[in-house]
Image 1 (cartoon, rainbow, N blue to C red):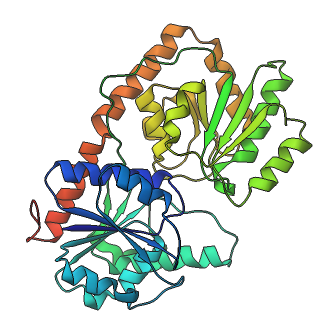
Image 2: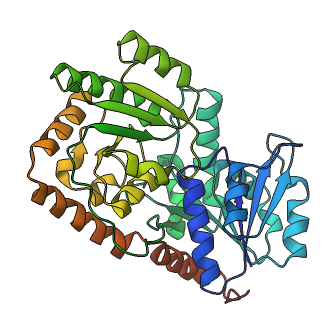
Length: 366
């Protein structure tokens, strides 16, 4: 049996990837379960509702915040249910599994690094990230969704052959979508409202576009986060209130893509964002920074300089000047790349092969 462990704060990229992985592993005949961690008395989490909707078995595990080498009985649950593979999806369980490594015996410990949130130097979040990067080397396999990921220099030798690379993947649509070829006017930014997602950069780009007398541009933010009030205040200060909308947290956000002309992703850091894959699957243009694995997937005419609102505005303007046939060619080729390399079935097979390489007793329905 495979047990995925996650302490989720919403239904964003890592959670979507996990759900897609579980669905594919189940379809390939494997016994899969998710342990969703939360604080005592916490109601149903967004990921738990999504797992239930997809008929994926999960246990809503509630425990006090902070770290505990004993994991409050989780190891008892693991032994009782004959788990073969523990697959962590976040720093909390990475550290917990590393601290209790001696309890694993013949159980394989795997983690996927979905990306790191930037924090102030020596802040609590910064220290958690450092602890995570340092202790992951105690697990059996560390999987990055970004081929360019490199562990911190001081612990890099400890990783040895434990570091692997697996593309994120999402399910294929029943049939290829029709490319969205309309001129770009309505922009959507999907993601947690935090520094690394570049919301302020998107606002600056919108201002540039409007100053070029394109008065029909608008920008919508889907998501919540620690900088939400700051970004709302910034939009007001810039005189953009009538051009900017805040949807808050949106369940199944991909379902609203059809209401927008393009997605913007001016991120300062990324791994392999699910939003990027969703946009390619839906054949919608997405303008994104040259960070993480994004340049491997996106056409160069849709790539923008990291941290540059002018570059983002220019890319959107240039897209609108293209012939519809050129736009169609770009989106069609990107869909082909998605289908070949970034589908959920391809991702699931690579993880299964990794589990087998670590655990000789791991087989179908095991």
